[in-house]
Image (cartoon, rainbow, N blue to C red; front, side):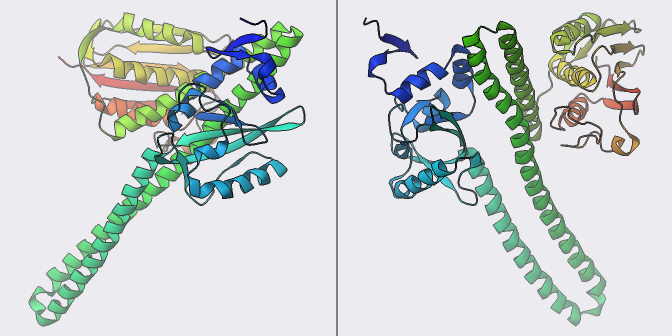
Length: 436
């Protein structure tokens, strides 16, 4: 092998044959950055100022149906249907003239072209960075095929509802005419019309709520994902600079930032996945016998690594109850959410207590913290979907955790209650009936 040869993604490359831009790209992709780039759940394509793709991560290759590294060196317009390529070239030059992060195709649908010639809907966000006075464009690509199917289904549902409403109105009109012919049936017909109108209003209200929920979901997901992704990207770039200067302490600091951001992204995804399964009715309860104290201790130990500096969890076992029948997976998810919240909303060094209360007919478990507490005005909305307390401040979260906990507790036929004082702390208690 020539001394100028090297391997990149299991591919033999001669360094002398690379263009200056490709050499710079090879330098940028340090091991840490490459790991993040390769493992992102979103498609990422890097394009130089001539429109040539310099790199694409596995998700982008999967979206467009290409083999590993097959997209590298191809023109970006290759990924567009023929009818859009000429217009896209002009828009690409316009972006390079005044580059700034933005979304593509606002107000209209975008289509990508797979290698096999099939088209699929996509969303693209653009960012950029400079290398030796040249602009490199970074495109974040999402395959929204499933979302488009959902939107189309919703649109058809709305159209059917409009037709139904029109038919209903026609039927009401016909019945109103019949009312004029029979005074004896007047009261019954009026009641029927009112019932039909209420039914229509309820249907329309439900559709409106679904639209608002979809919009809020997309907004929150976009906001919550943007911050950790930006942190990962900036830390990865800084790690390369500190590596060249041998500043190991700063490298370690940014590695921890990347790990923290990845953990936050994982928590968000778990919330959304749990919510989706609950909404679809796919969460089944499987009862089995567990030993209470070992189960609680094991759950606490799993969460120790996620606590803030100086925080500790104490287990107070007041009950003599040794075994219960429950779904350990669901119960673990409930406790994970409650203990994680206790840590997030408490200062470093503040204690957290998990208390197993004594009761021969119920399994009572309380999670107690000395955190920021919840103001009275927020308490009635605490279990609402997407609701976050007004004093949550900069604490990361989607507003789904307690809503998911409440629904999990309902699946186990239990109840959840809480007591909280602003600035003092909170206590959340789950009460599950003992199943024989």
